[in-house]
Image 1 (cartoon, helix red, strand yellow):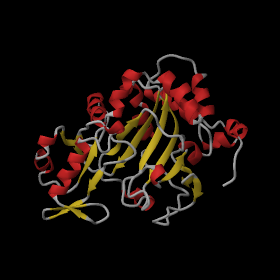
Image 2 (cartoon, rainbow, N blue to C red):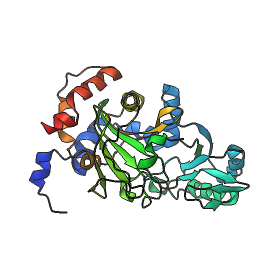
Image 3 (cartoon, one colour):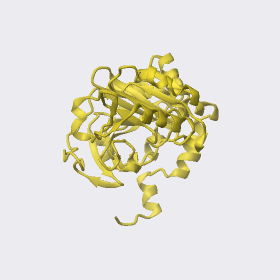
Image 4 (spheres, rainbow, N blue to C red):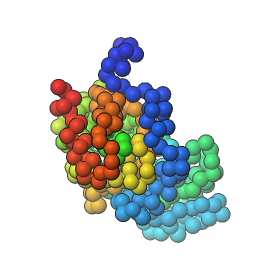
Length: 319
């Protein structure tokens, strides 16, 4: 890959980490709002209160002596997910897709005993996967039954749609597809594929893995060309609605598409990554500037989405 000069990055409107942190996160995200999104359990409880659809919470384990509660929470469930409330980068997320007697089956086909599950919960509680190694809470929640139309674009994991929302306006989106390299997780730094998505139509623009363009999924071999996200308007509405819930002016909303329940909010991030710009072949800065130029004042979710679809989109970027 060739080098690119800083002046060229500025011309492309690429937002770097320093500018993101100072101009957008620090100015628009009050510190008091962070605890809600940095703790997935608090996010889920708040979303439920606001009537925002999320995967069902089966239960939580807060202390080491409660590890035995895990058996009660799991019961006879065949599928579920165990995750740390304050984890980051997909660390500590354990997905169970089936049972064989007293054994629990992971997406890779390997099996775990109940004792091993309790050991994983104990590691979560001790802060092994949490931000700053803080003591944590283990959550047990519903496994998303993701839409079959995504099966060709993901390997042993649930693809999600990351939408960057600025002052309540959805400004850029990306489908994150897990790979063998990413171990079934949708984190780009672990080897997942990011597919830029047109805000207007919900269709694919470009796909990247490790910041390099790719045409096909590296494991399934399926082309990303012509990919269209189902229920796109509802996904935009769900993501934009996170603005009122969190009071964060700059956020990343991760949405999954459940085959039965439709779009669900999986997580909200107060410091969304910047690789979304590479997947969309355009910098964020121009779009954020356009939002700043809009007439200030309260607008409902539908009006904000209408503005975003008027201002942005792949066709407009090509002009």
